[in-house]
Image (cartoon, helix red, strand yellow):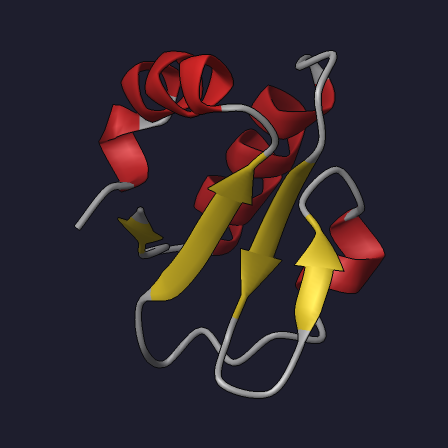
Length: 73
């Protein structure tokens, strides 16, 4: 799934959402993949373009996509 953030608050909200999940959530730009539960790691990404999100487990991906619908592109 692809996401985009409009503000610093969006990033903070997304990290909070990812942190609540019992499964791994990763975010990727063109150069790197980071742990979505880490605010510091998230800020190493390039936010100028949509980012890719991967979630461990197909059923978890559906659940997380619904929870993160605000950020989906």
